[in-house]
Length: 473
Image (cartoon, rainbow, N blue to C red):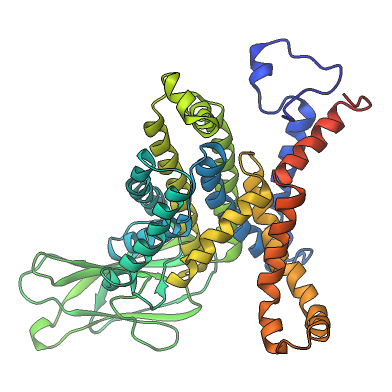
């Protein structure tokens, strides 16, 4: 609605008429906003410039908001534009998170390959749970997608416990690029261990140890971290290489902690006098919050632009027609079931990308992060932000996060003193524990009553009023 020109400005070409940003001023403001996002970590307390203008807490908040913006934007494609209800979006995020973690831990995938692979896996599973949309819709479809919210976490917790850790937290390796530089040392043996210092937070040491192909039993490679502990073979930062017989022929390890490391060959009488080739190199690490910020935020912006352009295509117009009247769309020759499945696929892909980013940003996973309340919360974010609007996901996620992390903590002490006095017949402990859900639910009710189309709709109205000023029509 607000994609109009200011008063007195006219389009003269088809390219101008189809452009998302209709004026140079629009492009300038968007570019400046993106530039401000990129500069935020550099101005933070932990930034490389040390300017201390922005708290690290706000940098982490922007990163977390960006992850959920991706997930809610996928939900917007399904709910806002196609009109299909989903209550299992957090479960699809869990597939992306655990899928990428397993690919990185067990199969040696890098973050850059685990991200698209886990997103594609999530999309395919989303297609399976989108099949009921052929027969049911509305409340019944919501119940069908609710099944995913229970089936997927159950499968991750019990049948796949050996891979996911079940109820235990699962460690996730940090993304790296490289090694960028390397050099070889051929003198590693049981009598001459390798000692080296590590600890750069951005350029970590990558060590690879490989035996020559031999017959018989290989010796043991021992790697000791700065704490003096031997690093186990299942460490999240280690990749172990084995031959057909299951013998360990080498390993690669990322030394991300500060201190001295020791790499040695532990040999007995049957494996004496072995040497191994050692390669050391420096790799660009994204283990810190600031480094991950520069993956998460640009990717979130790119996916937001991609979603907006999808809606402008033939597929996007078909989504909207299915949402408005699926029977009329079918009479016009639109394959309704096909486009519903496409919407489920795209929505799940976005959820998978968000889950993968969440896993690598936190370096740890737990199934408690993907429960039903998370799915409901994301649906609330979309309602408050504005379903069916390109910026609805951004507005909704930002509002809810600020409400949860700024407004509620500020109001909580005041309400903890006031509410027990207003309701003396209720236990004060119960009142205190209910403040968070009361405020969250109250905000949702207010938006449903006063602004049912969400913040994004009000923003579009404001932009139209600004562009056509001083005219009111």
